[in-house]
Each structure stands twice: as C-alpha cells, then as structure tokens.
Image (spheres, chains in turn cyan, blue):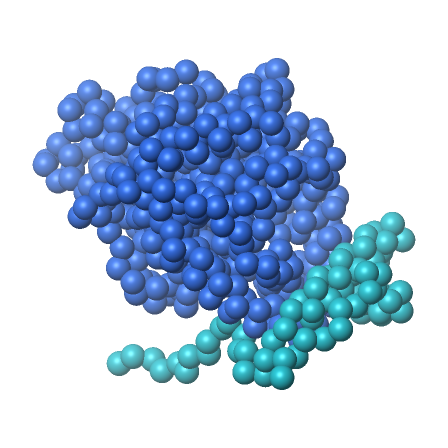
Length: 76
Length: 466
C-alpha cells in the first residue's frame, strides 16, 4: 500500500502559517518588522505548498531516504 | 575579440609555455594586471592573491626550465570562487558577515591544483552564501552585482550566479580558468550568461573539503573554462577520492580518455526544450541541433513526471537551515547585501523533519528514473537557459517570470548527474546563449566528448567580449 496522501488545497491553512511564523519568531534573537514577517509568511506558505506536492507523490513503506548511514571505525 | 593570449585555452597557453613564447611568471603578471584593470569592472574579484601567485609562478617556471613538467595545468593562472579556503587570504563566501573570515587549512581542490602546477591568482566574486538565501536580483554579494563582460557598457547585464566571478573572469580573459560550485545551477547559469564552458561533475567526483557547505547532499565543485576540452583537463586534476569528504567517490577518473569519441552519439532531445524560451535561444538551439544531427542520432524524450523542483528546493532549504542556523538565529543574517536574503532563509528554521525526509525518499525514485532515462543516451540536450542574461537592474521575478525553467536542472542536480554548458550563439542585447549536455552519473567523459565534438564544428567558444 502506498503512502500517498491527499494533496492539500492550494492555499495552506492560515493557522498553520501563523504557527510557523511564531516558531520562527521564537527561534531568532532579533526583532523583525511586520513587512519582514510578511515575507516569512510567504516563504512558509511556499514551503507548505511544496510539502503538499511531495505528499501527493506515492511512496511505499519500504522507500528509504536517499542517504546511507555508515558506521565509523578509525583505521589503524 | 579572439586570438589575444589572455583569451587562449589552457591547451594553447600550455603550448606557448612549452615553446618558450611566454613564461609562467609573465603569464601570471598579465592576468594579475587584467584582474585589477578589467575583471574588477564586472565585480568579479574578491582578493588578488599576488604574493602566492608570483611565488607559485616562479616555482612553475624553474621546474619547467629544469625539465620537470607537472602536466597541462603547469604554469596556468586560475581563479577560485571565494568559497574555497586558501590560507593567508580571506574566504568571504561573498557575504558581509564573513568578510574577515580566514582558514588555516587549504581546500582540497586548490591543493590539488597547486600539485598540478596551476597558479592561483585570485579569489573570485560570488553571490552571498552561494545564493542559498533566495536572492531575487543581481545585487547580492559583498563585491556588488556580478556583471557579464558581454556588451557591458551599453547593456550591463547579470553574470549569472552564484559562481559569478568565475564566469565573468574567464570570459574577460582575466584568468586561464576558474573553479565554480553548483548546488542547483550555479555553474551552468554563469557559464551560460558569460558565454564560457562550465562543467558540473557528478556529485562525489570532486572533494569539497575546505569549501563552504550550503547543502551537503547537493554541493558540487567544477571547472569553468574557455573550451570543453579545458573542462576535462581541469577535472582530471581535481577529481579523485578524498577521505576528508564523506561524499567523495572512489571511482577512478582520467581525462583525456584512452579513446576519444567524435561521432555516433545518441542524443535525447527534451520535448519541452524550446517551449517558452526567447526567440534567439530557440533559433540558436535549433541551429545547434543541426550540428548535433551530424554527430549522431537525436530522439525526442520527455522527463518522467516527478516533483523535481520541490525535492531540490526542500532538500537545499532543509540543509541550509542547519549549515547557516547560527547566522539565521543570531540576527547576523541582516548584514547580507540583498534585502530579500536577510529574510528569505528564516522560514527554513521551521521546516519539519518529515518533509525533508520525504524529499529524500522521493529522491531515490528520481535517481532511478533519471538513470533509466540517461542510460539510453550519451547526453540529454537542451538550451542551458531559456533567456539571455537579465538587465543588471531588474529583478529575476520581472525578467524570468515568462520563461520556462526546465525541470532538467532540478532533476540533474537532485540525481547528482554531470552536465556541461557551452556557448552556442548570441541573442538579445548581444548576449550569449548556451547549449547544455546532461549525462549519466560518472559519465563526464561522454558529455565532454559530445561538447568537444560540437565545438570542433562551431566557433562560438572562440569569441570573447574583451
């Protein structure tokens, strides 16, 4: 069974966007103007749309991420 | 302009050096002078490494005089994008917050080039942080907007980025060759807008030790030169395994290959190659196609339907949220030159892990699909870019919005595939257009052979702006 999920609507939920903006504000040490926070909102919306497009692509449980962990052992 | 010594290829410069028509020191002094008097006009220079250059040139000269020849790059002056560590000089990453930054350890690539006898003459301008923060206009570097040397007085236009200075310095004849980097388009774009040959090697072919990281799983280093053959000569010097870079491959590489292909190529023509491109880009591509049809077969193909742009975008942004976390959270990001770069990266701090990991899971599907496609051909062919360079004072949104950004660039970078951009004519405002060959992973020599065969039948790569 694939993990394809229902694509989100074009416009991401405003509550989710505001939650991302709040998260960003909590992580940065400087104050940003309303105009700058509007840009953060636009970028958050863009990320949510990209994520929705990725969710629309079908994956199976066995589809692994394309990175490989290698145990480390120093030579010698 | 053609035929001046500073516009010659590595092969031609090497022949002159070995014939005694010039010396490494004379050549180095010539390029040092042109960097200062010509390349600075295009905001292509961060640091001129004169002291080191003259020292290395003297060494190269005495070795040649003694009969010790390190190979085709021996005595050839070059420039490196200013994200490669070079002790004794700042490594600014093109960004104001890092303008005083220095490193004690030499980058792997500049060390390899030194071993090959090449002479570092400059650290070259670049878009701040290799463009990771989402710049939307050319003025996004501590050295000012990168300008293509073509028609620069009448129609100043963008050099492309993020390897801006690497592209414009090669076109301006201010270095013998340059090193650029590509995460998503940063070698091929300035190669296209500056009318030079630029090679994006397979991911893992060239060690990135001592280079700025933007996106660990996407970053590549590669040559920008005055011919496809020169790209191969430089790649031969910088390729090879390095245990200091986890991505570095053990696959051997040698150029030139034992047998050089010159015909019988199988080309895959992307079905949307000429959709929504400028008229001159289309005309020049169709003219190139006629040349390529003499070199082999051309079959129209379509890229498999996969979310290439979204996967590339999410991977790069998720990784840069970690590589530049401190810059983003400390507020130092507000020192960047482009106003949009001070803000655009912030939202990456809130990108969820599950989105990044989903992108990496889809990446495997992209790699398999692209391998199945590229294994049928020697190269996929397309215009490198849908337009010529944008005017220096225009936003990308305004200039490029009607153009078709082919998914091939995202697909090739997500899959880590090699590609080469070569000049194929001129378009609006007298600016260069470009042709791109994209190949199967680890098949750099195949795309190089195809591009070389194209350049043997055309002369666009012999035309220079100054």
